[in-house]
Length: 315
Image (cartoon, rainbow, N blue to C red):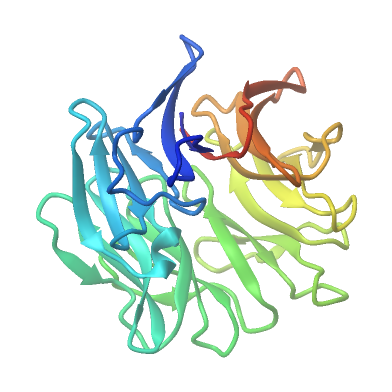
């Protein structure tokens, strides 16, 4: 697991760490790399296809690669602030990120082999919140071409762009199911107030749009488990001072509040590949820690808890 942690070294606030679950030890990967400016939104991600970590360095506003074998750092491309939204393609050969081009946000792909950049969305609209289908053939994203944010889909080369939802409501944070057939997202289309966002599901064809979960709260950031059994999401049902992680079983509809015994904000969660655990960040007023929820046992274990902030876990 890769994560960001506050450093005690003067002049540098954050470092990127790699945690070994078997050894239960962390390694500071950037301890001697003073040329890298790492912030809380550096968004480190692991590319298993080439054994590297990608993250944002804000000293030169660059997307960089850190090879885990050689510890060599390579600048991939210069980026704008919006690139905190970057994702790695399933085949590990490219990275997709959001960048402002002229006056609009566009989805830009950079080939990690030759550095070639391509504006995939390339339209007169704002495009963001992208995710890949499991097979890497489709990209689901948010587009405001109809006057409001709607869920859209396109081929991985930017072709066949089309909206899947209409302009009735503000649609956000789409996630596609492991079988590439369903898309879950957060929307205000049925809300009673500006802060009431519910979860909806629509077929990847744009058909069969229906309500998935409604709590009269802000329900957001849904994700399918790798086996498609659950959708995990974040909600502030307990009040605006809290955010909790919930699990809804897709077939039965059963709901479990995974963080009911925790205070403060629970966010930045990720499923383990075997769908048995959720790794997440618990953020309090002064510090934060990284915890693990075991789904079947409904138990929470502390993984990383240093003085200061530990955040942004990625597997």
